[in-house]
Image (cartoon, rainbow, N blue to C red; front, side):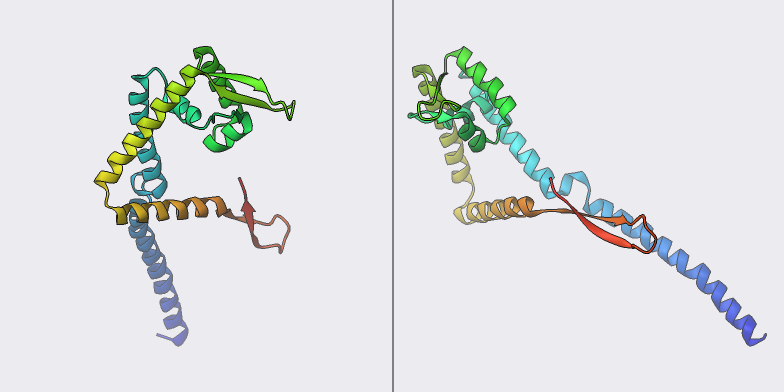
Length: 198
């Protein structure tokens, strides 16, 4: 066998061997990656399911008093001296269109009333009625009671770690930018990173 034939044989073996190794690695690692990144073990999954459980519990309790968790949360954020609609939206994270619908409902139920802000005619302030004050107190009592229950079940050190982790996740989430490799259409441009912001 000539040296050239030996080189060809090595080349053939190499070309047969490496793709098989690569295929094996991809298959075995894809199972590992899928196991790691399955829906039920991502951070956002646990955040979502935990909050959904809390919100459902609040809704069950709030329904006994004639309102919902979202209504109670909005009532808690309306202060004695009145609160502007934009302040309520910022404090609750509710979009203005949804907030408008909830406020209309609260007004119909007799929990709130609205007045044009004397200092700024473009702004509307929301005030609690006596019934709204009563419902607000109930909502605060439910939140306080639930948090006291959690505090009694979770040691202080774990609570502090949880709060720090949630604050870190919040900060990281706010700063996250999706990096996406985009191949340039012009010849020779290559690959570039594009930051996508939401």
